[in-house]
Image 1 (cartoon, rainbow, N blue to C red):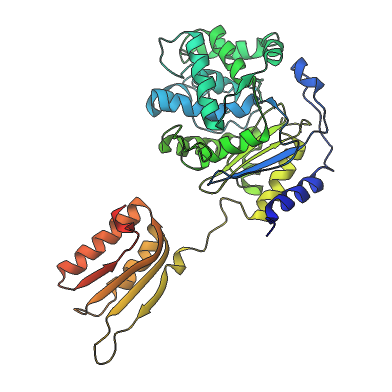
Image 2: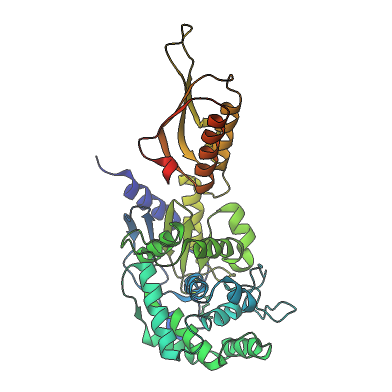
Length: 402
Ligand code: GLN
């Protein structure tokens, strides 16, 4: 069989290629030379399969898409409390380069420049030199991508020569006592971080790593702890698309981040990582074709995070009633994933069983269980036994053992 997914992506790309509004960014001189018609899309799945279409191998600087990954490194290195002392998690509703501070002097979130520069300075150990922090950023982002990324020196120098606004933001945070280190160092490191070269395949893998709880599905490396990904994806969902974050969440429904070179990255927890690139930007600073591609992908592949899955009501595969002469046991057969809502359905079924009758709890069709699902089911088995019921559990995959 020829896999239909590549065809589907090709078709989607063709249909979105007509979107030719917007302008290539002209504030970073080196980026202004990019061919405006370039357009690539890539998708990475949980088992590390990467599909690409169009300019999927074309490299561009990561820019603001580095922000969620730098945030992940800062969280992993310094812990949630320290990072939250310096940078908030509230959507700003402002443009990416706005002066967006809370009353206590904290930048509003790590997805806008003022918060991202502050976040960059938190990576690693506070005693580290600029070079040591740069090395950690390069190694960290490379681990997310599953290959060693390179710096675009020309873009770096070009952006560094135009950095007065970012420097102003850094000095402001410094004056509020929220910047770890010196403003020049923070902006220098942040600009380097933005100048790393990626293609949409890298973005898809990086996004999938976040979506898979920190495990890179291509290399198998656990890059950051799972709690870090929960935090990063939450902030991407509320703040990732700048002042269009609410509109994006309601139409596309995928935690995402865009960058001024034309990249867009989307990360759907547990399912898929997506990268798109096309240099023409809308007035908010996001790729016009990239946004169009995400809108289509979300609608056609059913990727909206808030679309309610029909799982819980199907938890009961069947109930075998005991024979009248009693030679067959009552059997409750569960299926699917035992998360809280699914187990709750099963618990009520177990609660309603006639007293005393022996029971077989059949979990052979259960795919997996969350921690709470496992503990509630174990608790139910214990309680039934404490009530004097004979309970046999069929659990060939050891779902209840975790
Ligand atoms: N390096 C860019 C800047 O700091 C990143 C901005 C962006 O991609 N939105 O201005």
